[in-house]
Image (cartoon, rainbow, N blue to C red):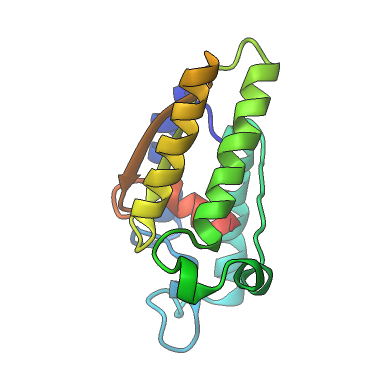
Length: 168
């Protein structure tokens, strides 16, 4: 979870670190896969130095870390694909948990502003949007608006989404 005030400086620094290490953005973990990934040419030492710098940047800019885990096998045991396909999947359920946990965190800390969300474009975006709208309607009914905006964008344009890919 990043503070909004540092969002633009984070993005600038992410690009600067990539340039120092002679890596073209965007950075996705799958692109380091050998032998055919776009960044497979980096040696182990070059990768280690790049990751060290990027992780240092992430840790300097994050407010806190939050993880919600939904195991695929457990999820599908309780929500069979043939009944729930297209309505709710493991990733949207994990996102809903993040909405709830961040709500509780913001509610507990008066100085925190409503939590905004930016997610990478994917095939479950409509389900994420449904979770967000459900949760916002709950907050509005309760008079507890601790959830901010919800935006879908591309990691090509948002370096924070590349960072999220690194820590996922």
